[in-house]
Length: 123
Image 1 (cartoon, one colour):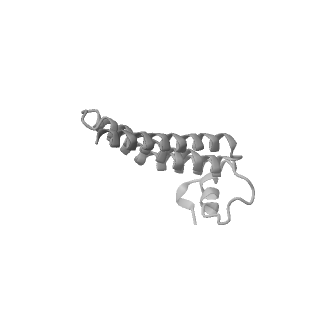
Image 2 (cartoon, rainbow, N blue to C red; image 1 turned 120 degrees about the vertical axis):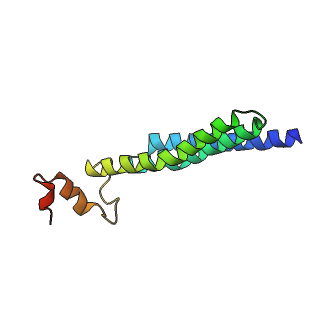
Image 3 (cartoon, rainbow, N blue to C red; image 1 turned 30 degrees about the vertical axis):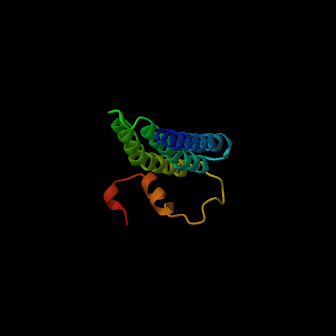
């Protein structure tokens, strides 16, 4: 039965590495910040979680498994927040391709944030 778990662990680790590699390629190859942000968050997080699960299976009898769980948990919690902040900053600095956004949900809000004057006088 140990060989079975070693194979499962190896498959998960290699699959996670493949996801992380495609994320790295996306970061290098994509043309603007918003598409790079997508490559940096989704496949990278999935790849890391797969590697952590594979490693957890490999060292399932060790106490350090809980460190892997905490690492995965913190990654899942912080990755969306970081992606949101990067996307919002890229949008405000106009670092996206023209015609990329079909719906401009932040158009009025971004203009209100850069307007000088007291905050209470907003319409």
